[in-house]
Image (tube, rainbow, N blue to C red; front, top):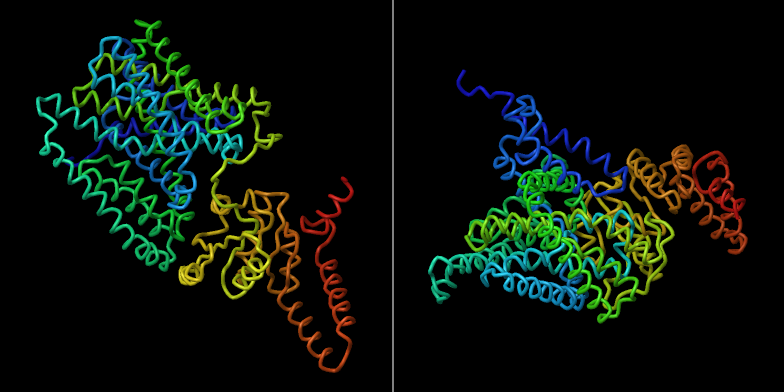
Length: 596
């Protein structure tokens, strides 16, 4: 029948999903980046792995990927979503405060490593343009692998972690100019000289960036605000995907990479109240597509080259690791990092990265780098990238730290670091939440609020508050708002079921967190204590105590006696509601007292 689709056409997608279902939980259990698993799976399932044997053993065709080009087209979105998430994690203010490390340490690292590798390639007989492309590809580290390792070991806020992130950020920013330069070099290779006419050919790219920035500032916030008012998770997800893919397509149509357009969109959204909700919404797509991207890289790697030229490829991989390690270590020491932090940063950044594939593919497509040497460099870069988890573990050990996230010795902070993280997270920014925020502000306590009503979010941000739109019942959203480092959580919502869900989620995520929650009555307060609230404040009880205080003052009872009796009665209510076997404040305080 016309239009009928054979199930076999979906085989590659099914193989990828099955691979993801096996690799991700298995590698997370082993505390190894799943990205390395996707790379290895791509090598095994690709035409240079089991696919090479399918002509002899026909049954292997059922477990190998037949159409890697079709998979690669979709996999390109992995880098697009990665750059979008990197943009979301930044802000113009953070970029300004980190400028010394990003544009100092990062720029020097890229320049020195690129120059050294390009010089070596020139000495080995490569043309200048090809040497520059190879140097650019091997000078960039793996943002995806390194940032995941930093997060898993809770090192992203250490001095070494922040220095590493600064270098990775500059490397990500350098990808777009490198690709534009390769396009110029490619046109020059076709006999076109570097004339003003050639440079004018890139005017549409500049116009595209300008359009993204202008229309992004004018349209992104109103569009997301309109979608948020609909209170539909599906519509919000669709709007987020439209922003990422739409910005990427506009960038591609003007001659730049889709990844650059997505990065600009993320940078613009980072200043809005929808930042954290967008992060939580996009994260699953980013993880899945990035896994497909690395799978496609593995599929394209011809490991027969390693068998044919093992000394050359392993020599390139070892040389890249040694060069990047040395340059980052020396620069980190010059910029004031302790030697242990410098060693850790150097080892993290020593391996190759995912953008080597992007840059070398562009260079081979433009005819700048020959395909045999390009494939050889790709194999060497991938081998060095697969060594990053081992290098990171070595860095933690040399620094005297445990490889798990516990027992990490504190390090001196970097100069020009971003503002301090919030100490209190307020969920719900209605009348009660606003008063709580005002009181925290009067005592100079940094705080962040989360709210699901876009109107209240807008009002709060206009007043200067750090208010974010999002669903606080999701642990991932709370983490992005600062739950993992906050001292306390205050839940002020007037929806009983919502309050209970947030308290349960927060207690499961942070067993040591102080949680103060608003309750409608004494029965709900008791329920909140059972779910893990440190303190629950029933509206009916507090209203009765305030009424009692007012009448006692009016009839002439001394204020000291009134305050003492109010506090005594409040403690009686709390003890009656918070039973010893509950997860809440009294039993937790009792356990801490007995343990100490």
